[in-house]
Length: 166
Image (spheres, rainbow, N blue to C red):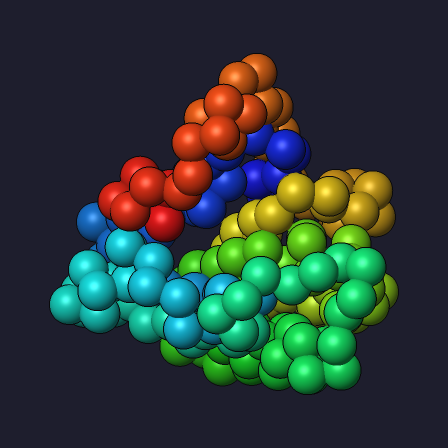
């Protein structure tokens, strides 16, 4: 699991994806809260064998203080897709990108994430990302890395940069 308020959680997970693919493993990535936004890794992933992904959510960012029913529905669909991929026997690694945010903002119930982890087949690896990881999820994880922000371009008013931040 990669969590914390620093940059690099999804990037670290994608590093794990590349490593797994290099060993011939089969990978599925489920993007929570990321919809059809043009993330730079996705056109590359589409060209690779043994990797697939699904995107859920909307192009606009979710407001944690005003979560909509549609956003909750998308997050529930994402969790269901991740569970199905995990249980299908088709994949060695399943990535749940931003699942921690989805659960900390109550788009999905953290107990459903906990249940999925407990139901994980032994031969499947899961990578969970997103800030705000619940202590119950941290307890179940075998590996937890916290990205800690020391400094960020946003703090100086520099907006997201194509190819570097998305």
